[in-house]
Image (tube, rainbow, N blue to C red; front, side):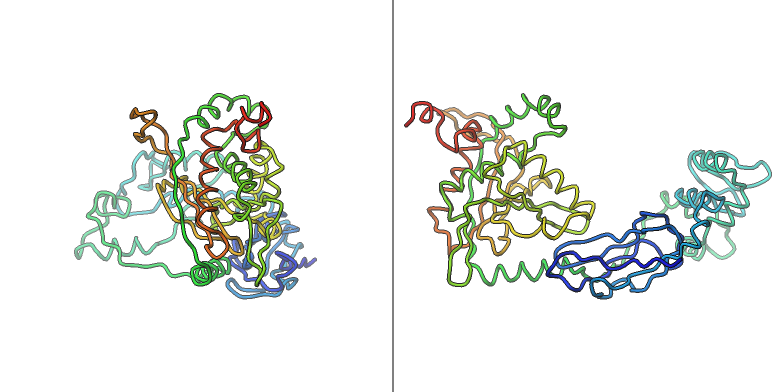
Amino acid sequence: MIIEIKVPTPGESITEVEIGKWIVSDGDLVEKDQELGEVESDKATLTLSASESGQIKIIIPEGERAAVGAIACTIDTSKASATKAEKPAAVAKVAAVKEVAAPAPEKVFAPEVVAANEESNVKVTSVAKKMMEEYHLSMEEVLSGLHRISKGDIEAVLALPKGEKLTSTNSVSGAAFAEPVEARGEKREKMTSLRRKLSQRLVAVKNETAMLTTFNEIDMSRVMEMRSKLQTKFVEKYGLKLGFMSLFSKAVAEAMQFHPAINAQIDGEEIITPDFVDIGIAVQTPKGLMVPIIRNCESKTIAGIEIELKVLAEKARSKKISVEELTGGTFTITNGGTFGSLLSTPIINPPQSAILGMHNIIDRPVAVNGQVVIRPMMYVALSYDHRIIDGKDSVGFLVKVKELIENPERLLTNGRNPEEVLLGL
C-alpha cells in the first residue's frame, strides 16, 4: 500500500511553503511517527512525520517551493517488515560509534583500547566491543559494514614521505599530536524562508519607523530574594521553576495601565489602542528566533504566565508551534541576558510600537542612602516608535517597570503603593 504524505498548512493565509530539509534519504526504511523532514514558511517551521512504517520515496526535493496539500513524499508500507529488529538494524545502531576500527598494516594509535582478536592488528574501543557482543556482531561484519575511507585518511597518506607507512604517530588517529593545519574552507547554505522573511522585516522596521531607545537599570535584590525564598514551594505546586520573564511580563502589563500608548499601534492614519495586553516572548530555537504570544497578560497570574510560557517555548523549540500561536501580540520582551548581553538596543517587532530588552544581572557598586553597596543590577532598554510614543510615555513606562520589579508586592495592587491602597488613597 502506498501512503501519501502531504504538505501541511502552517496557517490560513499561507498557500505555499518550502521543503527546508529532509531528515531521511530517498529509499530509506522509516518507522511510524518518525520525523521525515521540515517544512519552512514565512512564520514557522513544521515537521513532516511518517503516518505508517515502510520505504520512503521523496517527491519534492529539499529547497523547493511547494503548494499546501501537495504530496511531499510517499511511503510503501509493503516494505515495512524490513524495518523490524534484524541484524542490519543492529549494525546501524553500532554505526553511532563513529570510526569504531580501521584495518592498518601496523598498530594504529587509539586511546583506551582492548584487543579485539589476538590474531589481528585491529583495535576496538571497550564501548564498541561491548556493543558488538550485545548485538552478536563479528569483526568481519563490523569492518565490512561500517568503515569507510574518508578525506582525512587520504590526506594523511598523501602527506607521508615516499615509502613511509602509516603508524601511530602519523595516522589520522594520532592527529591530536600532529601540527595544526590551517583551515581555509567555507560553508555555504541557502537562507530558509523564515530567515529571509525575518531579514526583510528587520530592514523594513529600520526604514519605516522612527525608532529610539531609552535605558534604565533595575535593582534585582528584592525579586531575587522572593524567588529564592519561594522557589521550592512554587515548584511543588506548579511543577516548574519561577523565572524572571513571567515577572517582567506581569510588570509590563501593569505598567501599560499607566502608559497605554506603549500598547498602541499605527494602522494607516489611525491609532489602535487595545484594552488587552498580548505579550510576545522572544525564544531562541534551532531554526532561529521565534516569538510565541501570551495573550491577556493583564488578567493572568504570574504562575499562569510562567506555565503558558513554558508550554509555548517547548512547542517552538520542538517545531510543534502553530502560526496562530505566533501571530498577533501588542508588545514584545526579549532577554539577551540569557546569552550574557550587558546592554543592547532591541528592534521593534512590527506592527507593534515598542519592545523591552532585558539583560544580564551583574553585581555592581551602587549608591543606596548615601552608602556604596553591591547589588545585583540589570540594564533594561525600551525601543519605541517615536511616531506614536512620546518621550514622556517611553521614559515613564520604563520607570514604572523598574518600580514594580524593585517592589514586587505592587504587582498585587495594580502597580499602586500598597500603603495607599490600604488607606484608600
